[in-house]
Length: 413
Image 1 (cartoon, rainbow, N blue to C red):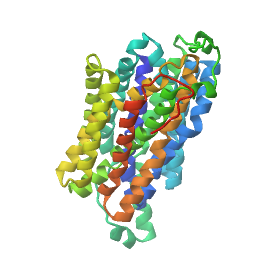
Image 2 (cartoon, helix red, strand yellow):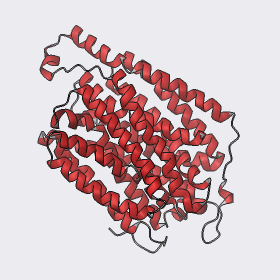
Image 3 (tube, rainbow, N blue to C red):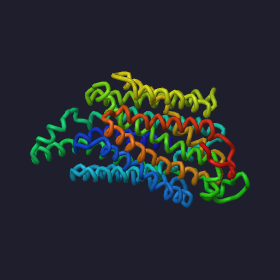
Image 4 (tube, helix red, strand yellow):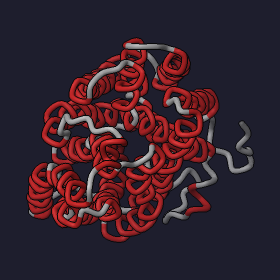
């Protein structure tokens, strides 16, 4: 229960990012590319901190990694208060980076921890169930916290340009101040959870408890990367996280421009997006009792490709409903790719987990590509060719990533 709660907490803060993006875009008069740096500041931390997180957990165990992650998570949330007081966009990015450093530890620990605390044959289903609470957070965060952050005011670029320095300062101060209370409360809750973990006796799995197929003890990057499944998993997770962040982070922009919705209404539909994502996780867990996870991933990837095309060419509310449908079908992808990627790693599981978590950097690198396409073409829908490509790579993973680990087999796409 404690470990599964982590999935909710990191899902909660991640799903505040699609609220922060339009909010800070408006407050600081940012372009789509500039606002995408919110995602970049979060997901670049996964690339930077995944290996240190894996090292700490190999040396000190899962519990230590979780506690350190919670401390960084909580401190990062508290940093939103001085960031809002500073009225500097860069400080918001810094606070998000600290939060994401904590999330890196949590995800590096919790994902493999869930897979090993039970029979290996049900690991994928078990991870999908825990990840379902990540989906619950995807609904709760925008639906209930979003209205606390978004002001609902629409100010054009011309109006901003017409403001004198005093008016501009007052405007930024008002917009920035609305993020203080939600992140302050979240930070205090997270620090309290860290205390609970500290005093809880948790089973751990040491590296010496595992051996690989050849009976070797100890772990190594070279040994882990011999796994074709892991190599495919790293590639697929890079593109999956990029797709998820692109679809979610620009949801409000798509809803306001393509369907003409106001900001508040768009935020409510974002809540529906999160709810659908959650239902997709629970439904996927159920379907996996009857359909092999890899086959379900193939079906969902094909549907997501078709929906991405519709999001590019559609008009009006069709676009909004299409994005909500994508949430359902991409919901199982992260845990399914993760569990398939680390399958059979044995003593290299923690290293493999770190490498897959590093690949989450796709969420930092691909949204700016979408933003560049949007700014260059003047149409946000054109940018959704990025998720289209991402889901295509995931489909290739589903066809090829299940193959037996062999060092001599090249990674050919």
